[in-house]
Image (cartoon, rainbow, N blue to C red; front, top):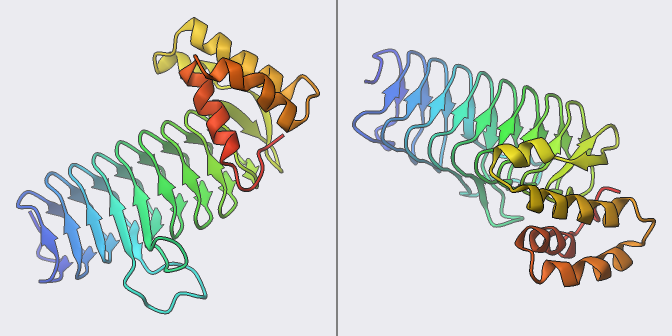
Length: 256
């Protein structure tokens, strides 16, 4: 399963059925789970732990040192879950000691060509990074987020679950769950209702989210006043609780 032209460190740990294509390089301190396919011309460095059934296409660079001038070679890590697809020329860097030291990628994500996950990022599950989407360091991406092509997210920003970032969006502030953002700088436009329907949200839940969006973005209320209006609703409405809780933990302020 390992092409004779590949270079695999004897200190790497690969499951018995891992496929490694020609001219790929697997460094020491790399663990790769069952069913994973490493195509040709891929470089994976460690410390990196990769789960099962992932697919790395040609020229992907995974687990290399962070692009951070403060990094001095400390033994930081990259952790990747299961069933992710990394298309051509994707780059995913390890963490730094200026955070928890770990970059994490969940499961069932699609990273299209030339997308980039910087050091210390935390990426959830079932996300889509379209071509050339890029994260700065320390970014948090929730489950089911879609990043359009050429999207860029500022370091330390957070993007909540089910958000949609339109192609070319430049995101410098936190994006609450369910919100569609577009432009430079990125601004909110609507609720990602079509995405929510596809994921099984009921009509009532989507109406509740749209009403919360209206209160936050269309009622001319200050942020504190909007949260006061939303708190009683959130007590009995889990989808709004996620919305309110995210805003309460925002550190860069939210897009408005």
